[in-house]
Amino acid sequence: MNRYKIIMQDKTFLRKALMITVPVALQNLLNNVLNLVDTLMIGQLGETTVAAIGLANKVFFVYSLLLFGICSGSGILAAQYWGKRDFYNIRRVLSIAILLGLGASSIFLLPSLFCPEVVMKIFTPQAATISIGADYLTIVALSYPITAVTMAYVSVLRSMNYVKIPVIMTSISILVNAILNYILIFGKLGFPVMGVKGAALATLIARIVECSSLLILVHRNKVADDGLGDLVHYKRDPKDKDRYFNKPFLMKFFLTASPVIANEFMWGLGVTMYSLVYGRMGDAATAAVTITNTVEQVILVFFFGVCSAASVILGNELGANELEKAEEYAKNFIAIQFLLTLLGSLLTLLIKEPIINLFAVSETVANYIRICLTVFAIAIPIRMQNALFIVAILRSGGDTKAALLLDVTAVWLIGIPMAVLGGLILDLPVFLVYSMILVEEVYKLIFSFRRYKQKRWLRNIVA
Image (cartoon, rainbow, N blue to C red; front, side):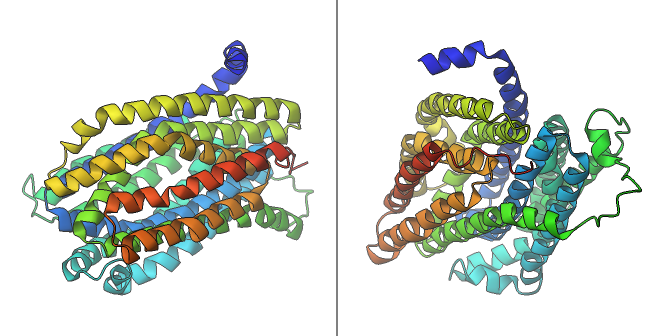
């Protein structure tokens, strides 16, 4: 209880934490509410369609995690450079993040465009599911390069404590997506009924609007003394003969970011293996997990907002060489996250039935969702403390190799074997397989807390 008294008395910390947490959580909430609305609309087309789009979106899921790794690694450096107000190096970080993101997009874009059926066969053997998913994938994949630019800018802006601009552009994008979904999926206002192709086209147009809005909002800022203006309109000293991308800077970037990129990609690939198992358990199991995951994402947005705030604030303090303050702030965030996750668990248990009633699914699928959400509610405190330790605290100080080891070993040595054992060997119900996979979170909690206590993350990496 003493820690909570310290938090309430530290008005500066509370103001910083709320200033970042609330807009980031709001942006994530808007995105995930849109995903929920998408699932509700697509759910009217049947369980096979829900399963097909859920599996097709696993391609974007893996890609987005690779992007998240690039942007998180960039954000670590950007946050610490912001702590010392080094705008030139923040711009270099942003440039590298965009270039890497665009390169990564081609790896996922080309197979999705030219052989979507082959991609879908990785996830499921069901012919109808493959056909529907391929129709969706060929259109939505065009949004991948656009998303790379958007995520790079959002990551750097958050590191600089600019969180309102991403919320504005996300709000615009969501409004466009929701309206176009309704029009194109069901053929309203004179448009033909497009079904899953309409959902994909709506997503593509919304991503274009999102990226365009973001670039306009950022680049119209001409003020040179508020940080954002310095970032966009920075004038390099003509006496500086150093190359824009010199070897020492690139070494620092990749030593910091490459473990994060590998972490997210390997973790995302591992989580995708779960989808391969679910996809072979039938459409009912796949639909239940797709809906459960969509609900999960909505419920967890505020907790990930806390993680984002922790990552930025700790990075800023470490970059400013305020190591003792960073350690105190980390303790504050651990206490806050624990209390909030207990409330989140209770809320999930209270609202699960109304949420299930929103979906037009069979009683079998509804029962699967009901049990999965109960298990999810119990696991929230453990999962979100892990996210705070690994994604925020360890990474903020560049302890990215330890984070990589924890995440990857948990998925590949515990989660995937559990999924294969339960889903393919023992042929257990989907809710038991879902529960077995969550054993990995207990492993991560033990070792991530131990790593946090070793304090190897308490360092300034841009000094």
